[in-house]
Image (cartoon, rainbow, N blue to C red; front, side):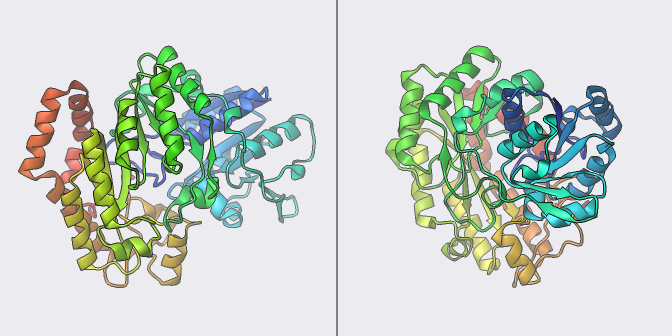
Length: 483
């Protein structure tokens, strides 16, 4: 059957697929990675799929509707996010013509399925959680004229106005069974439209595993889509995709591993690096990583092509790290940063304020900590809380969530907007601190000189730095609260 998988129109450049969806100050635009994996699973099952990424293509609602209607699918899969959910529901209702099955997927409806269904009145239902298996079963049921209620993982709108939950769906156990997501990008998308400044450009984004056993209160993917159980692709399968990219997409200069953390299993990470080296993988790679990897492993990863790691240091206060259940310490983070520097790996540091108990002293500790670590690049942001996470529940229960509607998660232009306060700090104070910390970090003469020197010596670094700075510079001196 014909199926459309659509990242619907909202704001041009809106990065719906990332953990905290928004238009970003650095020009980051994520691939619709979850939709792309689902596209691969459905194509493998024999269906004809059109993968549409409206925000990346700059397509408005009318243009997107025209493409969908021209393709005439029997099933439409609509990606969603918390800030865009009202717009997403309107879009889903618009395309839900008679004889067409329309389902919403993503973190928000997975966390709030009943509420999301009530927001619309025409679209058919919701797939809860990780959605390759439920979608494959649903497509088979529709094509075979069978009852969709027999497919696990769905919330379905009934003709009598009731909602039917079909039971918990199964997450994919054999990740090797999925086609290479890079091959899906190559067939359906323009890879030059996507970018993460922490990796060389152009790049592709893949997953080497799913699920995160760590208990951070704010992380939305383990709480709504992937779960906590760590599932992994085989070393051979990941290496084969790296070689596929290297041989079939010669224009691609980097692979970004969008795992919650690739370093859950330290021994496996070393095996992966050794496999890259032994099998002739030459392409650069970047990954998310926890601040608990040892020097030996980092050196081996660097030898295998690891260029940059994105690390959630989050706070310079052990009290705050404990409150967010991060599972690391300031001391461990300092050691990791030292080891990464010794290994020759660049570090992008993420620093967050707004955890329960945050005050001016703990924020000061975080800024001092960031300056001490001195990563290659850094971002400072108020905690973004999303339905399904413990941080969201805490904000609700403590009356520290200040948003009136889901669109409040973004400014008018689509940037992140702070929707929380703490017992000690207002939302405005959290934002002002992040603006101040950003200027303190990036406007240090020693930092500017270091970046300029590295850019002069390294052509790749020069391109990466100036590409990111071209969009980031206009926000550096601007107050984030200005709409």
